[in-house]
Length: 106
Image (tube, rainbow, N blue to C red):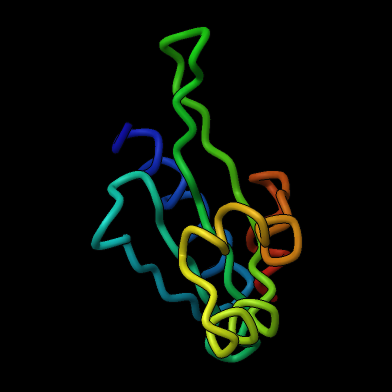
């Protein structure tokens, strides 16, 4: 699991460096399978998630952009993390291809 994330993070760091994009990487304190990647200059964030496929032992990585305005609105309105990941997920998260992560951060 960690190996897949680390390989992808290495690619992301290299691509961001080539594009002179300063990114910050933060692993989740609560969930080992989630990494947040942010770009302070653009104020954009992408979430990298390990998705363990139930039908197989293969590990798949998925990436999502995060609509920070919707996230902040939901928190202000008192929605929980479970709400964000459940009923509000289609408003807050949008799945993207792994190859698009740096592009979406810039």
